[in-house]
Image (cartoon, rainbow, N blue to C red; front, side):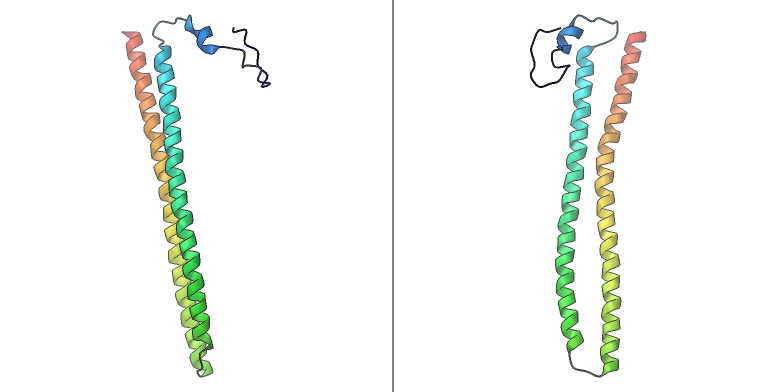
Length: 147
């Protein structure tokens, strides 16, 4: 144990784990390999988070574009609705505009859901790839120990 004093309030800060485990010897256990594997795990999580962040940033950007487009369309619909015409023509035009708006809304919702799904899938693929690597590294380490 190190004699370092710590003012952070962390009761474990005084422990120097590298020093404590430096003399710890177990046949087939490679502390450097473990540290390397853990660094790869951290890197994989960071990469997955980056992919998710990028995907959700694109999603938010697209949502803003959709909102802007919708506002322009609503203004245009209001302008067209106010145009002079027979009441049955105005009602028919309003019904058609409402149908178009619903179709666009559904298409936009589908697009946004696909974008979110893609972002999640890419992040999951990164973690899944690292998990597969972990299992392979573990298998190789057991093969090394048993030989």
